[in-house]
Image 1 (cartoon, one colour):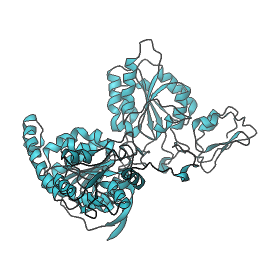
Image 2: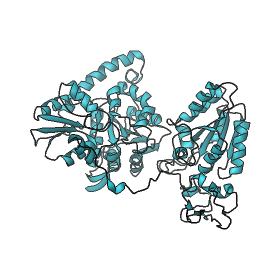
Image 3: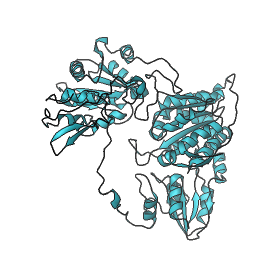
Image 4: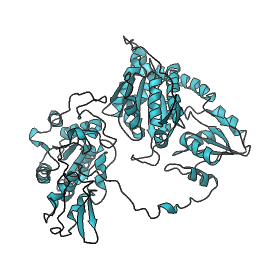
Length: 580
């Protein structure tokens, strides 16, 4: 059966056809839609885990028990999962385990451009890299066969364009596996005491040699001979761009970046006079090819930063400067913004008014760093806000009056912020933590989490109580406050009170994401501006609400009723009482 699928949809279908029984993930662009599509297949247990480390550990448990298991994450998620990853590469498994890593060249929704092909090499884990949706489906199924044949987890690497671009896919019936009734004990294999690990390391090295030989004959490392003058070695989406741009050239498509199919490359290099390697981000293949003593042109022609495109590939190989695209010249810049009615907006407006130093985190609220709010001073990675606040506080002079507030979303707090709050209490910090509890993982498309009250399959479950958790971690119960973030007066009072305390404080702002319809507390009646009362002070523009506009002809503000949801934040800061 033929279907039009994105790469992420094809990965999900591949999991279904491969007979996957356990799938765990933490949402993150560009990988999020994989688990969302897996949820359509009822015979797969699928969960949103609190973080990527937990997702991988859940999948490892499934693979050891005897169920094909899949862990899904974006590229930086592998950093979080690295601890179990490196150990599990030694232990091997009972049934196949595949890890999808979705890299993000161009940083469309990420804080870096790391190239996770190096993780495969570092962790000694085979990696496959599809170049279209059909291969996304096929490679996932092949990865499980490799995993079980060579007793190893397997990486499948996607990138933003592979994840989101659509192409025709042939689908087939799924494999059927019975669930294990008993877990076989094998501590020599699965308990990584040094004595066991040393033996397993030797076995893993031997298995990698076998995988290398398999990859040298792997049919998807496809060779297309057309020109004896020019040859291109490429992988993933870069292969598609190069093939589109230079159809008359010879090609070697690399589907297995690690272990690298060196024999295939050596054979191909003898069939052309001039060789190029085209790859996004790091010169991973280029380094492997040059290590074989083969002359090749790579990053001296192609950029190391950002995504490639057919134009960049053509200009690189022809050594031309990129042409300016006049079509974009007159389009105004449109910076990203929090939604109209977002419960986070009032929090950051208040923090800015109070002139506090704000250590921030990963989520929709990171947009508060952009003017005119400009209320976030640091953002490093998931969960870093609290640890950053501790380090800053401990580095200040004892006479310093600087007040530091760590702001973190509830999903990010559960992901990797809980230990930071524990650290604050244990090491006698005096800073304040604000948990922005909007009851959903909003930035990646409103996925459920342990504070939403629902599982990934929309089954009702227990809701994490942040107030009780804070007290359990040791925060003085008198310093744990809950507040409605739409009430700016109450919010300001609580923040001022808590930051002045001589010990850890925890503030929980409780209001659901404005797009979460099942829990929306706002009456949705749009606000209006009385032009006669409006004095044109532009105070309302300081909250950066997309529903509020400036009318230059009359020097007054106006509200777009099609965007306004009636959250009432703007009326609370209007000095002339013109908004109602």
